[in-house]
Length: 330
Image 1 (cartoon, rainbow, N blue to C red):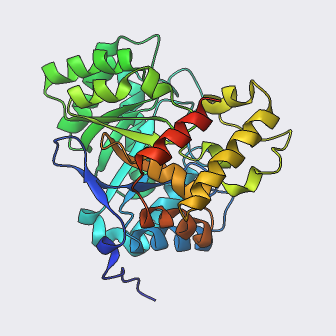
Image 2: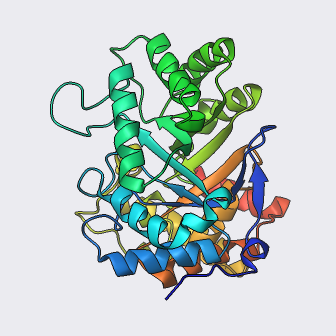
């Protein structure tokens, strides 16, 4: 059966321009970090990816090390792209990253020129693409000169393998430093993809949003639900073996019981808004226009649709914001 996208897909979700660039992203992008690589049947992954596009999610985010096995998330997306999404390539924003461990040996990670160029070549082959829309340096490289990383990303654009470049997991200071080099090279720097959610507000303390805005770039938030904590699944208790991401591990420092109490208080505010906690958490991130897009993942269509219902109520009253802030500071 030949796939045909929903004719009304662009009426279902808001989308926003990344700073003052020509790039526009859906408020929510679809990430393939977990659950859609080699541990999930292709047919299931295909259903979720195509349903996302039908709902107005036209940005798909990947990385060389996503899988669980390296590269398998890109292979999964590549199969869906070749079979179903290729006719819509000009509508899609496809992104990938390189920098965490990708292949054996000392050149299989970080952000040297050889590593970044080789990683993107592999990613393009796995996904069946001539270019990606954004290519990110996935993490700060403490050993390689920043100029080399910037020059490698600039080269990739000049080779026609990426339209824009970005960084991921860079601090405000690191972002400002590489943005200065990009400006000198004329490299189209578009944003920083970092961990950001209601419970993890490090980017605000670091003033990263202002640094990006001053450099005509946007913030792309990953982990918006703190690996599922900002849902209604853990209002009774958080399991002892909960697989928290390293960027959110600090949330357990004061004890899980205190965090559960905070989640329940936030859930009460969400219910009063006519939303689930997860939906309010997504809307809360997007209240700031400097957040260009929020990356969510889903292994089931029903979970995807549940999250996308955040767009039914994206506005917050001053009183609601005060209530939320009070809970978050407890």
